[in-house]
Length: 307
Length: 271
Image (cartoon, one colour):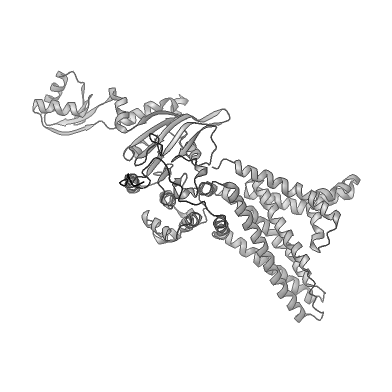
């Protein structure tokens, strides 16, 4: 066992297509028991990185190991690493059930495993008999997640798994993956939508233009951008609170029924307690991470390039 | 390792792969075989191949009985060149190209990263289907020849030797493999099918025309015309020189495309 390394270890990975560098010298690890979110705008290099992980794309330089092995050296890899790279990359003429059946047979699993997985992702027997071309994107994603989980793997690599899921589906997936990680599994999932990832990921890797621009858990990422910390607060007496905060040299501005305060929530709570002011609502300003995400990837956003 | 018994399996930084055996080749073959019939298109292609074989023979039987012609067992079998020989290569092509057009190669190669084994499994399935097609053709030819004996006034001729049967099997396998080679080369269903049809229907005519018109080409043609080189196989009359033609033209039309195509699949980035 190699301590200090992750279950998935990406080391100085680069992938070039001619003069275009899709992935530029990136390194990161994914720890077991944690959900790692791989976040970046479209075309940032997430999918290329994941394809290198499972041996579908050869790297230009660098390497990826999973549990200390190259993917190619893992026997019957579906039993160890569950992969969902593109839920639509299945034969349109096969039924959902048949797609799982093929996977189960390749991995040498009993047919009962197919039924278990269908039940797990809530595809009814009638839906499972339909052909993939008649599936909605959300149903394809559920089927793809079922396929990734077939072999009871200890590592999951999922590319945009929430894409096409409805809000209930996203909540379901969040619960599923959290539970999976709590049982010791390693999850790497990518997304271009921050709010999808921040609620589920313990750890986040932000990628833009093929380079990692930030990584860490939510708290440490925000701490890195602490200067921008802000909160929303509403008190019974907003005026008194404004005075008390301004007396401490903290910036306050009106925001709807309440106030926007340029500090962390704990400082506001303390001030309110000292001044005996009753608070009715207090929360960190949403979008703190979103601001950070946009800021960190701004040089790489398509819009920025165009302007 | 009992010292850390609270740790669940999987909660480590390494994968324990000691208990997992590699996917056996026989399982890959069975999965690939299943892929040939588990879609409507695939199933109907198989059914159509068998049905067309039967239809061609029944037509042949009706014609020869109605017109009082003499035919033998071998004639019935040879007529399957219009059915089996036409559709088997298409099955061979789709074995490979459907993985790319439907993008299932992503799943196939992530479940079995040893790509040479996957390709080999597909080849085994293709050859198996060719042998099965020949078996069906033999049964149908037997039935038709027996019916011919009942319906016509001529004596029934059972003139098929073991050698001829083997040569017939070889021809169908070659057709399948040529389709497979073109498929690997192009990785695109329509393009590979068109190339195969041009190769098997247009090219022999051009070669024949060239040989008739151009003196030096007449000497070259036997060495580069793979279809023509297979003709003596039909009645198992291959001479030493025929085998030489067969080998040289086979390298050009089968071995080289297959080698380049397989190399391409092994190295291709799968998207």
